[in-house]
Every structure is written in structure tokens, then in C-alpha cells.
Length: 91
Length: 436
Ligand SMILES: Cc1cc2nc3c(=O)[nH]c(=O)nc-3n(C[C@H](O)[C@H](O)[C@H](O)COP(=O)(O)OP(=O)(O)OC[C@H]3O[C@@H](n4cnc5c(N)ncnc54)[C@H](O)[C@@H]3O)c2cc1C
Ligand code: SF4
Picture (cartoon, each protein chain N blue to C red):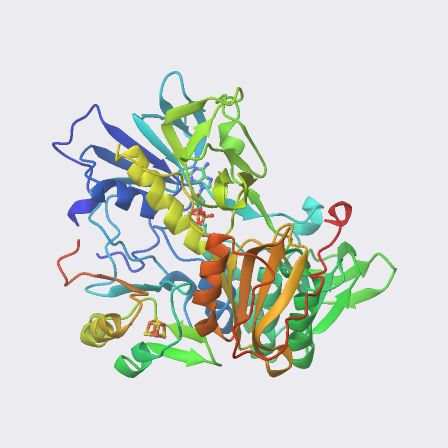
């Protein structure tokens, strides 16, 4: 049976903690972010500006959002969006 | 996932051990790989989770926008590491070159990265700190517990401490429309980092959003009703605050206890490093097999005349982690670690971004905008040099001033010909040393 909560793993040694099947992991360097909001246009379901400059984002998008997240990542003028993607060749 | 398997076929004699499986440790291990390190990597972490991001824990996680378990950090470089999670390091034997786990198991290292970060400073009375409804906020599990507590709609939340985490928690409570009181012994919020001048600007924002602010006040005791759950806080002046949810936000203590007996120089404020990032022993000699990075590292910052600092900034954990990874990989490091400190906070709808260190600043100018409009940039000076810049909802002005901070440009800055008038130099209002 697959681990229902892959991020909660037992004591050492830890054999596996693959993300939820095919999902992504996202983190934004908010020191870098200039609140230009390009990511919000590219992937409105996953990046939202609150107030003038507070960027809220989905840190764990599902595989279905892959294209939208990639559009956002590429659109960011300051490369602030960091993505780990099961499908982009990264482990 | 190949990178998660013990490394087969790696040279057994070259083993990088990373202690602390969080931001600095992850970015450090990635940087070592990127710099060409081909030996084994083992990452030891006290928490059972793989590295996750903490900033959302005091923001969207509390308001429910992000699940506490959803902030696992993206891995940006193939690691091929062995992960030993849920097992804390309990000791370091430098002569035997081994990290000793709580279980007694020894993990031999050739190169070691210390990235054990910090923990929330606990409430001084341990028994009161254990009462139901009393929280601190550092880990994902802490955030899940606090989020669950807030979701029960407590009649009033009490936040003890007006630093960044205290302010963000109070703001999240108001986002949830919960009554909240913030008690701070100083004269305003964020006084140590911003000084009272800008601290009061932030305080006014929270007051306007309905946070009950009590300055110059001290919580003396947390009391229960006999059931083991907190019901009230008693202040030093005898007044009480009825509350079933208390957040103790009194800053952080570095996780250095496991270094006892290692011969390294450390205390609650960090492990001592040289300018390169190698740790120092108690005689001040560097151990070139060991580096430290992130919240746990105290090092001389070249930008501040070599003053020893330990930072608690996300960007610093990333940059110093990467620096230490390259250093341990044997990459020739041309320069000492000199990343300009940078930090952000979002609270009550505003975003504040800071570059540099305000510590010791003796003057302040509002260089752009106007605090009355909520969008402005403040520049701090120390002995005639720019040492820090803080933008409030005006990050687009920040890069130009960040450059002045990085250069240590003269303060106050000379305004361009188009600007009318001179800048008014204000006292920043930092607490005196003995009040800190
Ligand atoms: C709630 C919260 C909100 C924040 N918000 C912001 C923000 O808005 N902006 C910003 O710039 N910064 C913010 N920060 C600060 C930022 O998250 C930290 O600077 C960063 O996490 C430091 O990373 P680190 O890897 O050095 O240490 P940590 O993240 O503290 O990680 C250290 C790890 O080491 C583990 N460990 C400790 N002791 C041992 C041991 N003996 N053996 C093995 N493992 C051990 C710990 O369990 C932990 O997982 C925030 C921090 C918190 C807690
Ligand atoms: S596109 Fe980049 S800079 Fe603009 S809001 Fe998104 S993350 Fe920030």
C-alpha cells in the first residue's frame, strides 16, 4: 500500500519519500520577488497577490497544473519561482 | 527515486554528512553536488519530515490557505543522498570524525555541514509551557497544532512577544476575525529590528486591524482552571487576560546543544565560524573538515566591519548553505561569505522587505514615499554609512537602496536634483543595550 502521507516518514533509514504521485513542489524566493504579478496571469489558480505585494502561492500543485506552473516559472522576470517537478527530468 | 537511495558505487572514503535537514542543509548538499562532489552524502534530521519551508507556517498555514504539510521544499539538484530523518544528532566526536546519533549509532564523516538551525525560545516556566492551548511556532507540527487551535475559534488569542512571528500570528488571527491581544514588554512591535520609529508604524497598522496591543507589559504567569488547559494570563501589574490559546513568540535559540564535548566554540547564539564558514574550536582554530550555515552559524560579516552575527533569514540559509556546500566540496572559494542580509515579512496585508542590518543604526531617513500612505522606503545609517533599507509595499524602490547598503554608501544620501527638499534625519529609536 502506498504511504497515504508521503511527507511523514518513519525513523532512519528512510527509504522513500517521493512526492504525491507526479505532483510538484514550489517555493518562491520572496526576497527576489518584485510583485510584478506575471506569475498570477500565467497561473491564476496557483499564484495570487494579496494587498500590494504579498504573493500567496500553492507550494504543492498537482501534476495537472504542470503546464501552468511552468508558464509562471518562465514568466517571472526575476527567476524567483523554484520548482521541483517529477516530470522535468529532475529526480 | 534514485537520489533517495543509499549511494552505491560512491567512493566510500569520501563522505559528506549534513546535520539538519532543512533549508540550509538541503541547499548546502545541492551546492556540493553542483560543485562536483561525487562522494556519499548523508543527511541527518531530527524531524521526521523531509526539508520544508517555514515562512508560510506563520502566514497562509494559519489562515488555512496552505496545509501545514504542503510546504516541502523543492529539491533543485539531484542529490543521491541517504536520508536519516527522525533521528537527531546527539554528539560530535571530532577526533574520531563521527556524528553520534541519539540511538548511539556513529556516522563517520570526512566532511561535515552543521545546519541545525534554531528552535523557538520556550516559555520560561516549563510546566506552564506544557499547558494545553500554549503554543510556540517553529516547525510544521507546531503550525498544524496552532492552526487546529485557531480553527476552534478561541474567544481570544494571546500572543506574547512583538517580533516578526508574533506580529504575523496576530495578523493571521485578525484575518480569521479572531479577537487577539499582543503583549510586548518593549515600547512597540519590532523595536529591536526596526526601532521604535518604524515599529510604531507597524503597530498602528495592527491597531487599525483590531489587534489589542499592550506595550510595556509583561506576562508573569499562564494559569489553568485545574484541567491542564490554559484559561488566563496574569500580567505583572496584576491584571489578567482571559484566553484559551496562547502563542509564545519570544524569539529563537540556536540548536547547538549536541555540540557539547566537541571542542567547538558555541553557545545558545550559534556555533562560531571564520569568514570562510569553517567552524572554530574553543582556541579559535578553524576545523577545515566542518562548515556551518543558516540560523545556527555565527560569523564575522565583512559588510559590518567583521561584527559577528547570526541571522534568521530565509535568504541567508539559502546563500550560506550554498556557500558551505561549495566550500566542503573543495571548490576554491575566492572570497569570504559576504551575502548582503535580506528578509521579508507579510503581515496584515502589507509586505515589508529589508536589506542589510539595522543593528547599531543611529539615524533614519524616509527616502521614498510617505508612511502616511503606507508605501515608503526607509534607509538606516550608522556612523555616516548606509547599513539597511526597508521597503513597505514599495519593493520597486528597494534595489537602488540595496546597492547603497552593499557599498556602504555615505549616509544620509544626497538626493538627485529632481528631488525637492532635504531628507529629514530621524532617530530610529532602538532600545538601549540594557533594555534589549
Ligand atoms: C514560522 C516562521 C516564519 C518565518 N518567516 C520568515 C520570513 O517571512 N522571511 C524570512 O526571511 N525568514 C523567515 N523565517 C526564517 C527562516 O525560515 C529560517 O531562517 C530558516 O528556516 C533557517 O534555515 P536553517 O536550515 O538554517 O534552520 P532550520 O530551518 O531551523 O532547520 C534546522 C533543522 O535542523 C534540525 N535539527 C536541529 N537539531 C538537530 C540535531 N541535533 N540533529 C539533527 N537535526 C537537528 C531541526 O529539526 C530542523 O529541521 C521564518 C521562520 C519561522 C519559524
Ligand atoms: S512573476 Fe516573479 S516577481 Fe512577479 S509576482 Fe510572480 S514571483 Fe514575484
